[in-house]
Length: 156
Image (cartoon, rainbow, N blue to C red; front, side, top):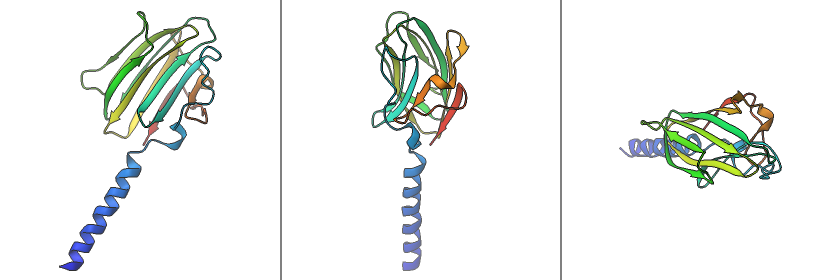
């Protein structure tokens, strides 16, 4: 009987340890990108911290339309816009698996903050002025890494 209890306890501890690593976002996404200087650089800036995932756009003053879709196999929760003006918008799908956005950014900052409940991935499909954006102007995490394509996923 004791052997069975010890086995169950060890399995439980293993599952708790595994759950902690499964639900953590990759370390490359942690922290605000060092390259994020509103009004001085053009691009998307994406990072994770204790309050969730953040997407920001900024330009060197000239107006650009940033648009895209974000998908998850979990659910988007606690979604809110950041510094959005009248022409900026985002929508979250009925089942909360998809989010679409369109920001007109001209030197300032626009963005969205959100959390993901469940699931293990988030897929980004990013555009500028109606065209796929170069990965060179997508900055992720404190190290300002660049994905390989304008459509990319992060897995936890």
